[in-house]
Length: 117
Length: 115
Image (cartoon, rainbow over all chains, first blue to last red):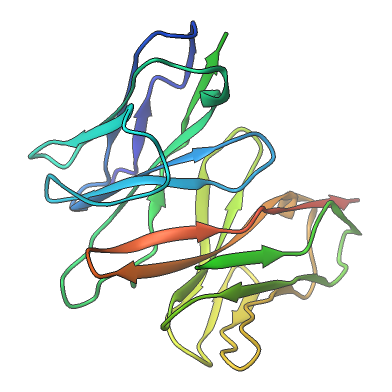
């Protein structure tokens, strides 16, 4: 059983640029979520996808966008990068069903460390 | 809204000491509760979970009981090891009318175990 794989592991970007982070979910999982973890803080929910459709969004501006593909892998795109976007970005996957929504623990990847300079 | 409050760290312990990390929550409805652990330079690992009141989650010697009356989910371990040094996050999973499974995390508690 493979876990959640994220790429790249580290990234440095300049303010104003755009970035795409990638996530390969655990085999058999149909739900993927993205979280932003600033240094010394708990992760903050960005958004979630279930079967290729957005399934909830946290308090993040529209320049944070995402996609989920038919194989349930996912991308997080951030436009017009700001210094405050520097953080660890975590992807998490889970197997959800309409009957047991939210009862499963998520499997997290190791994250992408984004530094905006 | 939903929130999770954890005791502040760092918590410094000697090996074989008893560990307690307090966690209380505020939520509408009946959330599922989780403890995640994050080792240096790594992502989060699910440590244990409980999905309804009075459930006890346990794993690797860690335990936590879902207490609805006190809205708490305290993490305990009877005898810690140096390898338990990490940051521990309490979290709840909540649903809205259009989504489920969003995790609300506490700020994390750093645990340092010394030989």
